[in-house]
Amino acid sequence: MSFDVPDDRRYLESHEWALETDGVVRVGISDFAQDELGDVVFVELPDEGDDLDQKAEFGVVESIKAVSDLYAPVGGEVVAINDDLFDAPELVNEDPFGEGWMLEIEPDDPDDLEALLTADEYEEQIA
Image (cartoon, rainbow, N blue to C red; front, side, top):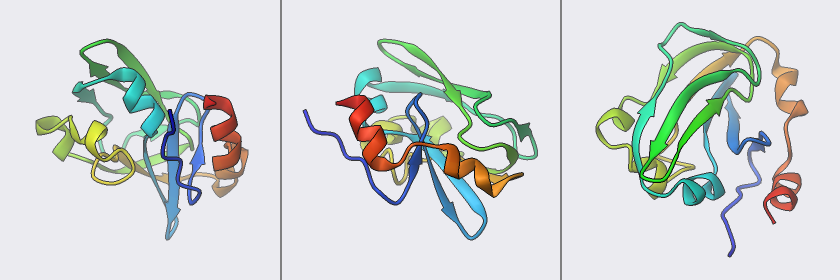
């Protein structure tokens, strides 16, 4: 099976993606992760203003098959969360790299992104 792995992002080994735009990093889970989880029924996210450490747990995604912890690809302040997921958690399945994004972080250290997997490295991991 082939999964979408956009090469404009970096990835955590735990299947979160990070996309930096104008100094803010948008975070979600990969196509592979949403497929493994199955139908997502609930997402728990931090509050705006929360400070996260890189690779620290920031929330939970619950599906009909499993409950999975979510980890921050970069450390910093949560500046936005995707409120749409509370009413429509299935967006994580339908559009994991678009409408299914989870939160945005203003990173403490922009170099955090460099420590993450490239799209090619992530594809090797999930192959």
